[in-house]
Length: 362
Ligand SMILES: NC(=O)c1ccc[n+]([C@@H]2O[C@H](COP(=O)([O-])OP(=O)(O)OC[C@H]3O[C@@H](n4cnc5c(N)ncnc54)[C@H](O)[C@@H]3O)[C@@H](O)[C@H]2O)c1
Image 1 (cartoon, protein in one colour):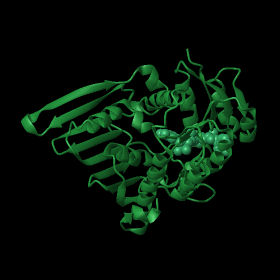
Image 2 (tube, rainbow, N blue to C red):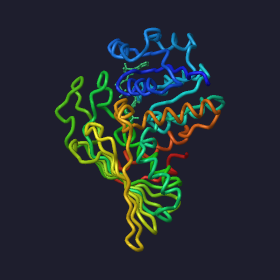
Image 3 (cartoon, rainbow, N blue to C red):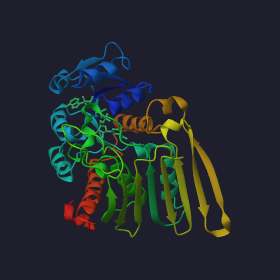
Image 4 (cartoon, rainbow, N blue to C red):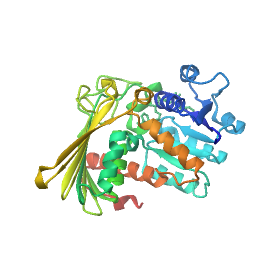
């Protein structure tokens, strides 16, 4: 019987609470400490944890109490670098919500700061852990479709939700939509394609969402739709089709990988649909071979979050890495690269040009 992993959660808004709900259904894990600067967020969290859980509004106090084996950082994107700089003092395992930081520059600063860190640093890239996405990755890596040539990812969904103090309405706080949200998809591209990006070209705008909103007299400035094309060193092309004013789409994510002998596609329903299964379909060019299977997610796991079960499976992998002394499955470099591609896409739109990844001196 191994000891339970003791977690401390820093930032308990929407995502911090999703982490807690998932840890609560994992047998060998428990949340022992919470830190949030907002009283309302702390209060919302009380019913999710045991009475003995310690609550802090100051990160330094949490750090000096030293009661956790692992910390989750789920504070707003623009606070990550500062929180990380301080939490490194703990020398405990870290799971940092995406995006690692709002800019590639800040990710690089964190890379330098944490160079000699001896514990796990894991970037939270939940989409990798959605069961249908896991199957797609496995089939592509097993060469079921031959040599992959194209990967397209479509996300058509609802607008950004309201966050504490509305920090997510401005690109300066988030890194911009293509960093904030789409780092997930750029991470998936690198993982599925197994190569590094060379250039990025994008077209996008804020055409519909948040245009009537004002915060301290300012209108939000975040993109709500875009097409982004990413070319990879191995010649594979990735494409993202993002639309954030499409709440009643049949599927929230549709991912299609095409190789020289066939194609694999998966369709992930939105959590609002309440559907517990998704389809993974493989079709081969020769002999019209097509097979389709349903990937189901347990209802208790689905109910613990908004990401089709992925946060639960991410924690199982994180805990396994801690207990077996393994390397993180989602590294600091993965976090950094996903931000860099997102930043390149934002620049491509702003500057109306192709952005070469070598510009980032990675
Ligand atoms: N993986 C995903 O799919 C996913 C989904 C949503 C959010 N996120 C990420 O999770 C993070 C949090 O987002 P959210 O949606 O929960 O936002 P949120 O606004 O709902 O919650 C953030 C919380 O952090 C608290 N906070 C702010 N500064 C703090 C500090 N210095 N110390 C302690 N607490 C602090 C706020 O009071 C708030 O309660 C962001 O980085 C976001 O990008 C990831």
